[in-house]
Length: 401
Ligand SMILES: *Cc1c(COP(=O)(O)O)cnc(C)c1O
Image (cartoon, rainbow, N blue to C red; front, top):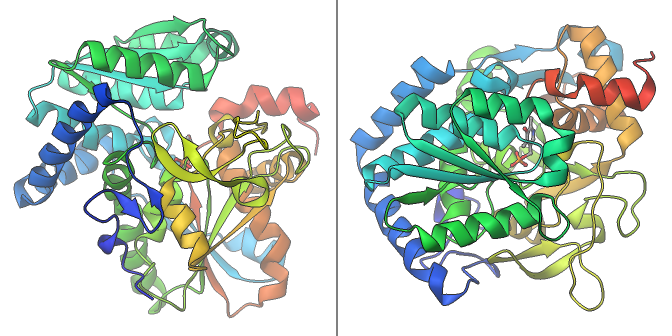
């Protein structure tokens, strides 16, 4: 079995059976332009030097790999390390991708950046990166999401971005994606579409993975320096899949390191009540790619639910679909209650308030740690900080515990 992630995707953008570019003709030309530009840039060491300098000086990398001593002792099991993406500028891993794509856009001579956003986290990362380079930035956001996430709308506007309300369809993320696509087709000459996770049509899943692979590269060096050996397992939450594929990519060639992705189990694994694509989903085509999606018998996308907006999505990135089928990675889910409990636990045990997304990874660790024993070495990707989720937790459980 080939497990070197650099061998995927193939020349047509496929990860085994998954991925590809299933888009209308009007989108083919801009995607091929982007692919060509990225292929040529990614061969140039100077491009990566520019990227790494920005990650260091603007994003604050490298992020620490911290031994979670009290959490490990409390769970009476594995020795747990946290990869602290919550300490990256803007509070999550999303900025790594935003900076990378902005650089690609600049090299292509684009002056205008557009993006879609659900809860607003990707919109904030994009607006931040665009401001750093003085590029015009337009973010499409469902009107209902805008009402729910007022602070992030305000943040984006502070950063100079224009936030465009989308009032069609369900007035949420998938309608914002459609609107952003429409804008891109109409403004191809000066506009780059900055997609937020390791999904969508080729070359996005590859490009986003490459930009997020800095997480895995750093974590591998850091654990070798701290422990003198590779970890037994890596745990990460999976929304679209970018933080997970970023850290997995550093270890995917190390067969003895287990890779575990944690999806949103919501309130129950029943249609409309969760977002665990590998528990209730089947392969299909959605928003430009072939992958596991939550769909009904007629192939209509099902509604999803999660306490965490970042994990609440119908489809998963195509590289995860391949790793799943190859059994190189395992995918599991935890529910809303378990994630909320883990949120509180990490705050008290380590003095770190985690994002609700990341709390899903912590919740899974709580379930299995005791079974693993103290010789088990584990890294959990702490994808982001939880300041954005304090209001949600307050409503959910009144901040009890
Ligand atoms: C957006 C987000 C996620 C989910 O996105 P992925 O592409 O799956 O990484 C996870 N954690 C945080 C903190 C996020 O903001």
